[in-house]
Length: 156
Image 1 (cartoon, rainbow, N blue to C red):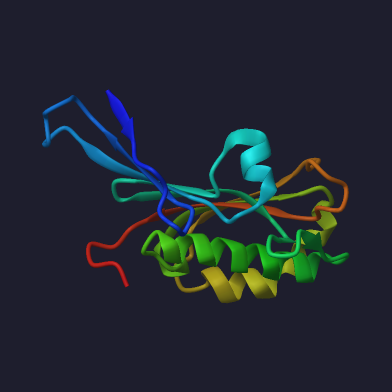
Image 2 (cartoon, rainbow, N blue to C red):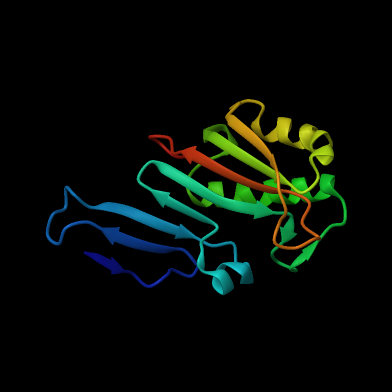
């Protein structure tokens, strides 16, 4: 049985999931939004916190405040990381808590241009990583990053 709680002003929703009346079996599930119109149009969350795990959806280089995207992969990867960093922070994590990351680029030759920004974000955590070359939803998107993190016992 699941019940939905109205979202707080930040845009997140908490869902209590478990058997009715069984507090031990319940777990808190938090939906995190970036405010992107894509999330509402398509029906997904920027990130989902489920217990100690944080799953950050594939995130592109859109600046969600302005719904604009840069023309170059270097600027896009930096914006991707800002978007992911914001979701991680709302979940009580940092890049140091990321355990898995996936990079998707339409042009594999662009990947080395992303390395400096990726090394700065993930160099300490050194998560398991995969790079895939695949088409993205919009031709202006040059990179998409998906991440999984494990929340610390005492979040920052």
